[in-house]
Structures are given as C-alpha cells and as structure tokens.
Length: 270
View 1 (cartoon, rainbow, N blue to C red):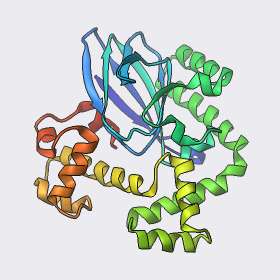
View 2: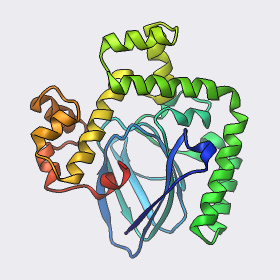
View 3: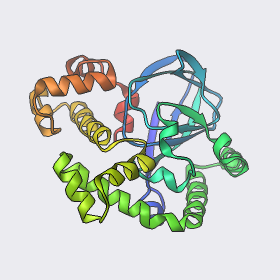
View 4: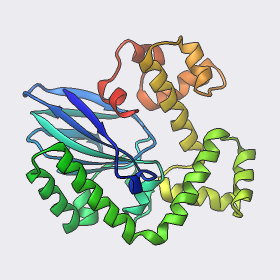
C-alpha cells in the first residue's frame, strides 16, 4: 500500500488542499470506516480494483469518478483488487467553485461526478488513464482545475470571504463570535449561517465539531499525548465531551480507536 501527496499549482493553492495517489497491489479484501474530515474529495479510479461504500442500508459499488460529499457520520467502505486512485482534496469551502449545486445535497454520499459534470470530467478521466507518470497526471489536474477556476472567476471573491469566515470560526466557534464575525463582514448572523452551509454543506456548529474531531484524530495518530491532554488540546470542554463527539463520528471511544488505528483515516487527515 503506497500513499503520496502532491501540491497543486499556486493559483489553486487556496482551493485545493492537495492531490494524492493511492496504490495497492494484489487481490486482498480490505475493510475500513471513513470518518468526517470537513473536506470534500474527487477520486479518479484508474486501476482495476473495486471500492464499495455503505449507503442506503447496503454496500454499493463506487463509480469510476467519485464525488465525496461532506461525511458527517461513520461511513463503512470495503475494497478488493489492485488499486490506482488519484484523489483531489478540496478545502472545506472550495468545492463550490467546481459545482453549481448547493453543496449540502451531496452530504454523506459518494456520487458519480459524471452525473454532475458530464463530458468534461469523463474526458479528463480518459486522459489520466492514458498518462504514463504521476507528474503527467498532476499536470492534467492542474490544467483542468485552473480552467474551471478561471471560468468561475466571479465566485472567487465570495469563496475568499467564506474562507476568512471559517478561519474566524476556527479561532472561536462561540455564538458571540459568530455574531461578531457577521458584523465584521457586514452581514446578519442568519445570512452567515446560510453562506457557510451553501458553500460547505455544514452549519457553523457542525464545522466546528468536525474541526475539533479532526484535530483530536491527528493527535491520537501521533501517539505522543495521553487522551486527557488530547481532549484539552483539541478544544473540548472536558473528557466526556471529547468521548461523546468522538464516538458520534467514529462509532468508537478514543481509547478503542487508539488500539486499532485506521489506516485510511490516518492517511487522509493530513
């Protein structure tokens, strides 16, 4: 199993967190659970392996070009076969430069991106399959998403505004700060909630909960601090608050997760 990160072109850096390539050999079956990350992803399947995700009470085969909406609860996955997957991980607010739909309609789903974007994304998938190196594939992604960003230039000011709002909420998620942030941007608190949901698929409260959870998951993976310290450093009120939120996102207590770290989630929280 091999996992590599790649940085996007500079113009895309405010919108795409990173690209990644995941490769695995052999036909061993694999099962895991994906946890909320706060970010949406596009995944191009370039190999022969099969991924399935648990949706609508059963496992369904994922499409060749996957659009991962905001995951707000544990999502079981399983795979078989050899994989070559090329992923694009967007910042929390940034998928809206690519999609015309309200982001929340994709929550807790793995959708077929060709249903949303059609021929353009199908053609890109074909070129990615034909490319003979990681560098060539990254160049194709940079060119494609730069073109999409340029055509969505009228949205960039709003996207930058949402990014600044989320940064403010990360520093202080209290209701008082939400009101102050709305005032700073000359909008009402109600409109701030609407903007955040439209561009992220999350309410400010949900965004904060996932941000704290993701911080705790990274600290657990580093395995340098006791769980009590992790709860404090991740911004939880107390240990019970930490355990309650962690279990809602993973189905496990922090100590149970620590004894069986999830490879998929530890790779994707960076």
